[in-house]
Length: 168
Image (tube, rainbow, N blue to C red; front, top):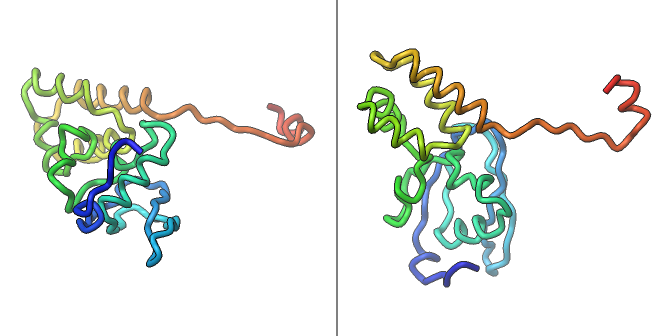
């Protein structure tokens, strides 16, 4: 574990929103303190967990880019002061994204260097259609970054005969 979990971490209840279309699993503690897995299923689902549960969940994620708390899949609603845009540049509200879309060229470049989550970039494209003053160049830059940020699709087959019948 990266650090000790304090009593404050066990007591503070955070609220997050799933803004990605994927399902995610978080770790919750049962009444005995044992781990149990809980699904956060559909987009726009609000859920609550303690800071300790979030830290344990994040600790169990193998790759940093798969962490939904940091890659923009979950948006913070009520979180401790330690979770900020500085610690998670992909956790932006819709209003923050709208202001970025029409920001100065320098601010735009700075934001585009740190925003790298497919969920956040997809939200930026959706919101760009609603904001007046977004240039076509910015829209295309977001689309380009989204294509680069999406993971490669990998199809695996265990049945070699089936793979050959599919013509792959």
